[in-house]
Length: 95
Image (cartoon, rainbow, N blue to C red; front, side, top):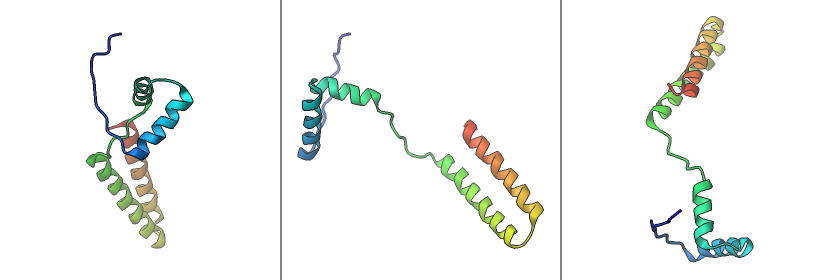
């Protein structure tokens, strides 16, 4: 497979020293090492605004449940728990 795309990376001295140690251990080229590390690594994306909003709603529900438990409103507590379960399922299913 032809590799015709070139990218440049910059490292601090400390970063490159760590990389060099790994290269010395593995006995492979920097290009092979970097390619392997980059293609193998799963990127963590920033949390989306909608997810933050949904988590905030769940937090509000938990606060309402705590108040209800302290106020002995058992039916209300069960209703809120069902709503939280639904919200968590929606988050899990991506809707």
